[in-house]
Length: 279
Ligand SMILES: Nc1ncnc2c1ncn2[C@@H]1O[C@H](COP(=O)(O)OP(=O)(O)O)[C@@H](O)[C@H]1O
Ligand SMILES: [Mg+2]
Image (cartoon, rainbow, N blue to C red; front, side, top):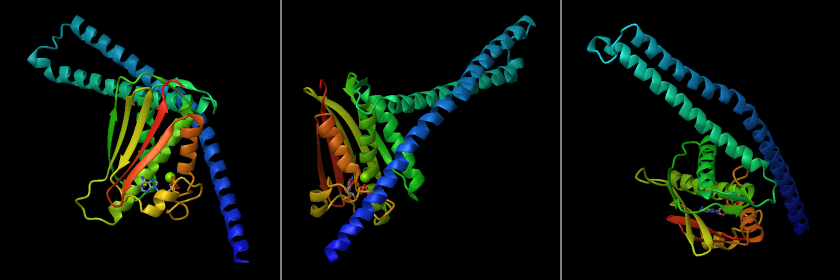
């Protein structure tokens, strides 16, 4: 009888998980749509900052024609104002371009078919998704903060991967790492510096990506079960227990790679992914 109850509970849990993952996939479609829509107004911002900059050139020409010498001490205030204006316009363009990069990233990864291998800059992909995860965690966890260290070998060439999937794997590992440092921070003194280190490097024919945190670590029991679907130590609403089983599937089945980990309770956890550079 109690077996029956347990089974019913498991079915109920599965239903909840399916609903959640459906919500997530429609969120993906939605964000691609939003990204697309934001690109248009963003183009205006970038173009007009360029035009405004050209107009500052015109302005200085006119001043020149009228006999204003901007080098002259007497016109210092005017010269300073023009210089400041230029630097602000440069800032608008710079950050506008940065936003464009992010949006193009989202569009690229959401556009790729789910089984398509695309030559991808792993450094770029990591940069984007590491910070995406950081901001998502910061929005969700109260008092969350962490130092993120990024060490990406700049000589890694583009690698053929399924970008949608690898970015998902990165987000899963990052979310777990952020959660682990957050958890440890709740039960520790103030000298603790929560840190997550993400590395990308090459060894032989393989690309390696590691995500290390100095968070709560794992007990032996957790170490044995963590790749099981629905295994979670997190309260309902904070964990689904699917992250690592999905991640292992992405790495080992789809990319013919490997995922391993090392961990010590209350010290650290490090997950390392390796995938062949030429699949
Ligand atoms: N970086 C980590 N530090 C400590 N424990 C971890 C870490 N990553 C995963 N775990 C453990 O593995 C479990 C399963 O992880 P995962 O499959 O991502 O599911 P979820 O995050 O939803 O719980 C977590 O609940 C946690 O106990
Ligand atoms: Mg997880």
